[in-house]
Image (tube, rainbow, N blue to C red; front, top):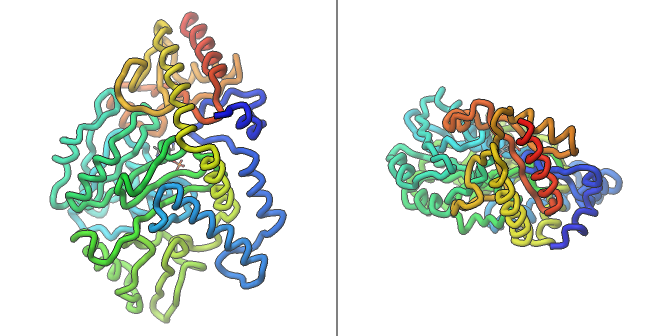
Length: 429
Ligand code: PMP
């Protein structure tokens, strides 16, 4: 991978060492150009106007959805554009028609965005079973098997831990869910920008991720929904379908109509999403439009399409290899610093991991480490609980961790600079 060439697309890096891409990535020039070109050359609303300019905007916005679905191997499903992973997960939590006593299984490793939406459902009588990971962030598949019972409707799990960097066994969990007739939602916010993720391999029903963590604009996120054929899924699927009717209380809804994916009600109702409206109800469109009521964030969606083009041009496997090489170097260096502890899989660990590395230095708070790096050398890292308070409590990390996270534009020199700074900080602590 030609990192220097890539870096020329990110002028912001000229005087900055950015190691916080797990929070949000930087934006390359071609993505900025795609966003600006919408505003400069063909701005119009989408899904509405018949004039040529509106048709161009509509086509570009539609193309972006297709590109995103193709990027995850999910051409036959529906990529719905949301603002972020959080909204995508909430859409599923609010859109499935739950019954009192239904059970959801998740893990203690989750970001709040993949925990709180399920916790809220306790108010309507949902049981939430939370599986605890070990210190390395691994979950035991036997625990998952045990947690799934006849009442379980959904398993919600992240693919790559934003706090410890551990990769979770998505394919195995997908297989278990399929065998047990349970829906599977994968939070791919941290994996998809950095490694090949294929919904067919994983066999998930919902894939949630953030465009803004994969070189896209802020305000871009995705919920990919599996396309299902009537009755083929399992009992769970048929049950959800029947319930959809009553939850909408719309007499005129066509009971035979399939949505663009699994049976899921939209979060918002309003303009742009309807097929027909009657005195006492409405039917909503197939595909993504049914889930994107109101004027969407058009430029963010088009920018996300450009981000997918950018990543595809470089090759996601190349991105992954580059990041893993940097991660190995970083872990090896951290291993040699006295008083510094890595949380999650370290230098010699066989546990599969990504380029998110958490650590602490004896005698210093994570925020202090981050502030020192910033002030001394313009190095940006994240510090704190990383929206994983239950996990931090479980691990006994009251103040959280310091976290460096890597992406395609980072270099060996930047890693060395970080290590040099940390060595000095640890010596002074
Ligand atoms: N899940 C994981 C694993 C994450 O790392 C994040 C972002 N840190 C989210 C969900 C939430 O993403 P967003 O803020 O884009 O909604």
